[in-house]
Structures are given as structure tokens and as C-alpha cells.
Amino acid sequence: MIAKLISWIQMFNNETMLKKLKILWLCLFVPGVIGLLIKVISGERLAGYGSYVPWGIWIAVYFHAVGISGGAFAVGVIGYLKGIKGLRENLNTTLLVSACSLITGLLAIWLDLGRPFRAYRVGISPNFGSMLAFNAWMYSIFLVLVGIMLFLSVKRRQANVVNDKTGWLVPLLLLGLLLSIAYPSQSGAFFGVVDAKPFWSSAILPVLFLTSAITSGASALLLVYYYLRGESAAIDTPEQGPYPYLRKIILAGIAVYFMGEFSEYSLALWSPISHLKETIYLILFGKFWWVFWLIHVGGAIIGFYLIFNAQSVTKLAIGAFIIVTTFISTRLNILIPGQSIPELKGLNEAFTHARLNFNYSPTMVEYLITLFVIAFGLALFYFSHKILSTYIEKEN
Image 1 (cartoon, rainbow, N blue to C red):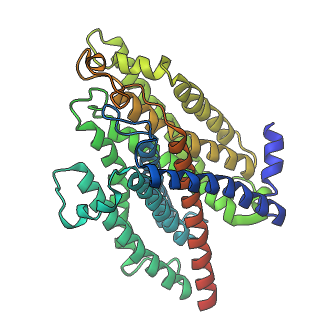
Image 2 (cartoon, helix red, strand yellow):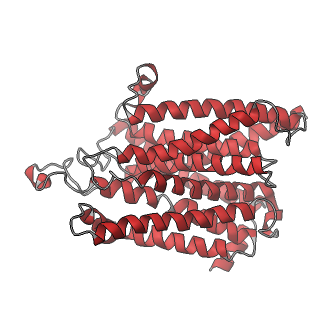
Image 3 (cartoon, rainbow, N blue to C red):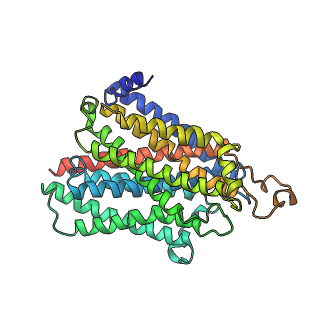
């Protein structure tokens, strides 16, 4: 089965395959637009979340996309500064991946808002005591920095001084590197300060969020580089380009994440007075047990095996694709179970209403809009990269 998949992907940049990929993109976009129209008409009524579980799958997509953004920037910029072949010459691509991922994540959370057109108020009257306001401003500053860095990088590319480390670009990259590490960690801290949710109130969450971000970001960069290399990527060996560098980061990230997760779960289950047992049992054996065991654990094992044993770039790319898609489970396994345990015993029985329910399940509209967000992110990167490449070629 893997061999057939590899042979299918090796045709990736053939004209026929590109047409098939466009059809696959339309299979995401068209249902997504339908879901978006339904949400515009119906508002929040057809979503599965409620008063007890107010954050659903769109928030998980938001955190995952933001993590990819920060991780891709950190991994790509460090590779650029170290002179890693492939990343050194493609700083523009790293910046685009990071910016497009962040914008995609912000779209996901914007669509989750009950009053999305009031989002501008966080800019004109922020409350910096709120993690949400702090994060929003951090994202805005980061996007402005990325725009400036992209401008400077393009100018260097036009002047054929890609390896020149003088000027403002490197200091801005270092500042951006600090922010790219900070805001995935800040996402974990966002949960960690919610004292009413014992499962979230954990010092290890920022570390897990950062580790997941770096792992997913490195996987996304590997996929993008594989795509941009064209047909030659199907016959290259992993020792060429940035593949060894990215492979080591992905493998290390998977190992570190599972070590941290095992430490948290095992300590909570071992302790006779832990308040987290009910939530962890829900993750492991509850309604969505398959998210943990099949998507999270199974996806990580398969992805790790393929990346570790890869003898071709195509096999490496398949493993990276599995990791970047299945690692959204790291967000879901924190987000949903953390809201699914009543703060007060008997609260779920005190009142009866469809919106007063701890058993959250995404609805069809939520899944459709998730497809739209994914299609939007892919299209945003594709057209941004195409426009930038055309501009650079024209100027040269």
C-alpha cells in the first residue's frame, strides 16, 4: 500500500497530477463554501458547542495552524542562519509558510466568533490582562515583521546577496524567532491560567504546545520544499537539501512530545488524589478514544517509522504529511476533554438544555467550515508564492 502511495506521489508535478490536485482542492473548497454560507445564514445555531463546551474543532484548527506558523518560522530561520542548504536559499518560502499558516489560524478563530465583525475592537481598546488580547497583538506584530522581512529578503534576492548577513534582516529574524517561539508557548499558557479547569492548569502545557508546533512546522516545511523541488524530488535522497535537518527535528519532536505527555498522564494516574484521572480516562477510553489511539498514537507511530526509515524523499514526505495532519489531535486531546468534565459535581444534571451539554460532538457545518479553512490556507500559500516568484523573476 505504501509502495503504491509512493508511486502515486512521484507523479506529483506532472501536468495530469496537478489537475487531479486541483480537483482534490475543489473537493475541499466547494463543500467548505456551502458550510460557510450555512453559517452566515444560521449563525451559531447549527454548531455543536454550547455554554459548557464553548470551544470546538475550529479552535483546535486555530491552535494547530498557529503552531505550524511559529514552528515553521523557528525551524526555517534557524536553518537559514546555520546555512542549511535549501533553507538558506528559500527564506522567502519560510516566511510565506509562516504568514499563511498564521492567517489561516486567525480565519478559523474569526469564524468561531459570535460577532466576528467586532474583532477590530481588540485592536482599538485592548485589555492586556486578557491572554486573548495579548495573543492578538503578538500575532499582529509578528505579521508586520514578516512583511518587512519578506521585503528585505526579496531585495537581497534581486541583488544576488542571499548569504549576506549584514543589515537589518538578521536582527529582525532574531526578533521574529523570539516571537515565533513565544506565541505557540503562549497558547499553552492561555490554557494553563484557567484555574477552573484542572486538566488545563498545568505547567507542562506551554512545553507541549511548543514541541507540537516545532514538529508540525518542520513537517510542513519539508512538504513545501518537496513540492517546490518538482519532479527531481522523487529521485533525490534524503541526504540532499534540508531533509536531514528537518528529519532530525521531526523525529526528536515526536519523541519529546510523547515523553512529556506520558509523564503528565502517568503521574496523574499514579497519584491517589489527582483530580485529572477522570479527564485522562475520557481521553483514553471515552467517546473519542479513537482520536487518541488511532489518530494521535497511530499516526505518530506510522509517521515516525516512515521518516526514520525513509530511503527516498517521497517516503519522507509521506511521513511528514501524516505528522502535520494527525498532530491536530494534540490540540483536540487538550481542548475538548478539558471542557468535558463538570466543574461542580451534578452540574450536568442540574439543568437540561441542548446547549447545556458536556458531550460535545462537531456537527456537519463545523466539519464543512474546517474544510473551507484548510482550502483557504492552501490557496493563500499557492497564490502568494506564485505572485512572489513571478515578481522576482520579472525584476531579475
